[in-house]
Image (tube, rainbow, N blue to C red; front, top):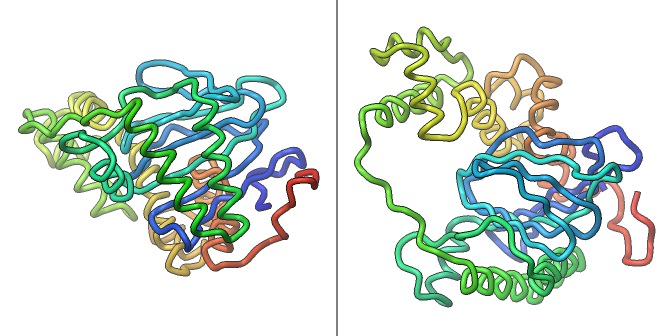
Length: 292
């Protein structure tokens, strides 16, 4: 397992299984590790095997226990940490928006963009399916992994799905926030200060802060860190070395990337890149072997 932190009682593996395109997987045990506030381009489906994970959502804190399934829609800011001293062990699926949309079209009557109406549900059977997707993928059983994933997503959409709100014409503050986001994306490696950004957009720093957080759930500097990590992930996916990825996205050095990447993704960039390259730091444990 690729270690997410230096602690011997923590382990994590964040990877892609070629047999199920459009899916990332994370299986881990965390004790002291905490996830910084961030969001995902796709969906998050998590099932705790033991312990408790506290997930901090815009609407409040949820406590993920064994038997529950956490469902987070794309671009919803959240953070997480252990809810009990012994931490938590869990399996998480990150299906792409395209993958979920295809399942929704085939299996539901939802109109427009499909998503989830609830963030956490008590559903031991579907939680078990989430774990079984991981098991099938680790055993190299593409037929089972793909089948179980589709059954789990379809079941959750049918029981807890909704049509996500459509985008409405942007009000003045939202337009300003969108322009600020575009400028930050374009100048990621050398971003302007808040005052410079506000001046360029013809507004004040505090007005820009309020508009940006209202639109994206995060202040500009936090959003930029999240965006840098997303871009670094794509660079690592393509084979870029972590040190080069760090400089390309605007981090001062690789340790700076390491810190933020681990707090958002759950594993260090080196371990993430090794998995993407198809390398294993050690054999996957069998069901009867004690985890590291």
